[in-house]
Length: 212
Image (cartoon, rainbow, N blue to C red; front, side):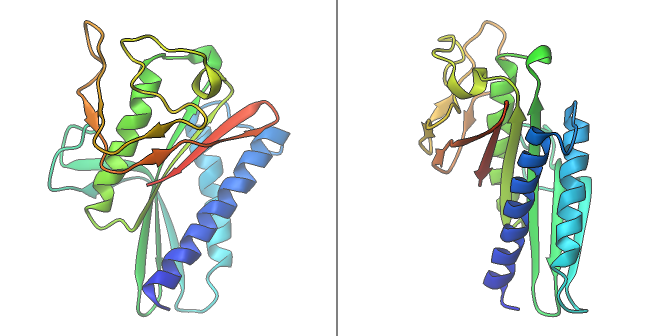
């Protein structure tokens, strides 16, 4: 299988798993009350689908939880040259090898950490950009929440309004994202790609998927 074809196949697995996850969670087929459960449920769907995509004996799908990626520079998230990724997919055959990294967030209204949560989303995206420089072929950021604050809030505080991924908002590569409070939650973040944030709403839940 050609590398490009293999990447498209693995992207299809992730996109299909995302649709299944969002609808099963929102419609009651699955229950996830925290980020760990969200990760496990998504991992189960990915693993099940991935095995169905092993069309030949040489096709191998592997999923790892909370695994490490070695970097040549420190990431904002881990503050070291070893970054722990939520989910790592490996798909290979006799001629090609593809790796996909996925970072997940699950924000509950009742346990809101605003505005830290918004900063952490961009921190995860920053890490994903770094993974792509170190052998990861495709990266995704996926967020689920029951809180419309992240999706359609009218206005954010001037100290933290740079960290904005509301529905239909855009980020321009090179823009400096700065936490302007007296005690910043973290250092400035600068992303290297443009992004458009487009949310999905299923029943009372909101979902954001960003391909990096």
